[in-house]
Image (cartoon, rainbow, N blue to C red; front, top):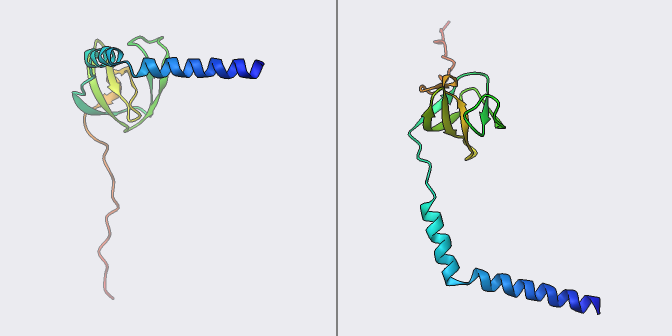
Length: 120
């Protein structure tokens, strides 16, 4: 009896969710909400200067750390606020880093030059 009751509950929940998802009014409301959500526009690409940089949730020294970035990692600059820069990481995460930790020039790639061969 318990099995039948649990199956009926699962079927009822599934039916309710399906009806909710296929509701055209709900879809319109969701689409309107998505369109209103501001998109973060990348102003320009920048590169990390120090060996390691903490990406923070807010532009504060004691804000939660979302992750770290290594030297020469390319990030997208979104906005600047005081000494902080909001960036988008290669993983798609938006967070704050110190503005001084960014540079505009891409990393220099060093290529080994071949020495001319001498004929004997």
